[in-house]
Image 1 (cartoon, rainbow, N blue to C red):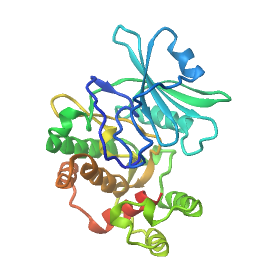
Image 2 (image 1 turned 120 degrees about the vertical axis):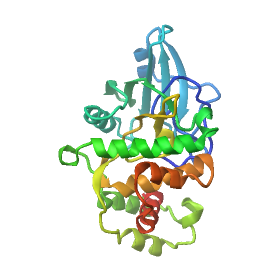
Image 3 (image 1 turned 180 degrees about the vertical axis):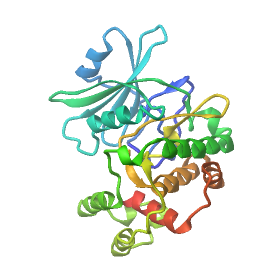
Image 4 (image 1 turned 45 degrees about the vertical axis):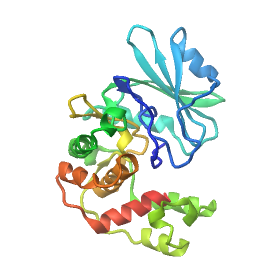
Length: 293
């Protein structure tokens, strides 16, 4: 759910869900639905009499719905069909519940599954996604909030108490699965398409030494940061890959994603706001690993 982002949803509400905050993936099947959407029975049951609005469809067919009680109460439901191993909503619920002790993330209301699929219900979180039109128009302010927010996230979460892993070894295993499934240079970002398969695999197999272990967000792209109206960082969403890793695993991609959403020239603001000088070796490595895994 943390795919690279090229387009932008129009987000004018005062709060966002993990999926509503995402911009359009490079896979064109990820989108804000514009036509009729079949509401799964489980979602209809969760909604009851509340208004149901589809707000996102991802490249795997996963759906996110906004539930509005008409009195200002808003919840969001992520739903994914059974047999979709790439998305583990039970795992995301565990990560949200764990992280909530230290940082602001969506509160889990319910998580469940049936024969047809699984779902995750969360409460709305104050703030606008950093890809909301307001922040697309003020990218420097948003980029600074992204950097400060990521630093706060890394500083707050205790590595020694984190039960979740986002290690290089685990991610290389995922890259190998994708390679075995037939993905190659054409599936990568333009920056990496010149690398043949053996070269790219060799590069991710030789990681740099760890700079600093932190609890990483796991998908620290621009849309997953929420920003208060005054430009201060508010919260993070979409924590399905949260786990312990080098801080550059998050930083390299967070800064990179400003190019996808705002255009060039804002990555340095992210690093400055985080409080670190760019590490070109680690940036290059973790961007390629992101692309392949």
